Image (cartoon, rainbow, N blue to C red):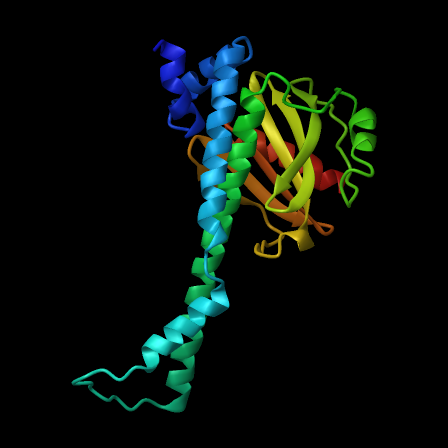
Length: 248
C-alpha cells in the first residue's frame, strides 16, 4: 500500500491536515485509480448514512413515546404541587428543547451530505457538467434541469474564478452546485429551494459552522437556501457569500 492509497480513507473522512488535503487533491487530479477509490468510498459512506436515516422516527412519534413514558406511574413518587402557569412553562420548555435538538440533528445531517458532495467534486477528474468561467453560459445551462432560477454574481476579483456547475441533490431536492476557485482552493456553492428543505429552519443571517476540515456558511434569501463550503478561511467564504447576497 503506497502513501496515497493509505490516505484515501482519511481524506474522505476529512481527517487529514489542510496541507495533506491539498496534496491529495493534486494527486487525485492525476491518478484515475485513486480517484475511483475515493469516489467509491464517498458513495459507500453516503449509502450508509442514507440507510441509517431511513428508519429514523419522526419528531411526532418521538413525542408520543415521551408522553407515554412520562404518563407511567412511578413508585415512591414525591408529589409537588405547582401553579398551572409553572406547569405550562415547564411543558413549553420541554417542547422547545426537543425542537432545538431535532433542528441540530437535521442541520448536522445536511452539512454531512453537502460535505460528501463537496469531497466528490474535489476527487473527481470532471467535477462539473458545464465547464465555463462565463456566468452567462453556466446559468442558462440549469434552465429546465432544476425547478427554480437563480442569479450568478459578476466576478471582479481576479483571485476568484468560476469553474462551472452541476446538478446536486440534497435528499430528494434537486439544486445547483457551483464550483469556484479562490487562489488554489476550491469552493462549492449549493443552491436549493427553501421550501424543498422543510426540515431546516434558517434565519436570514449567515451561520458559520465547521464540519471536519471544511467551513460552511448558509443563509436563506428570496425563497432560496444557499450553502457555501470550502477548506479556506471564513473570510474567503464570507466574500463569496457577499457576492451572492448582493446579486439577489
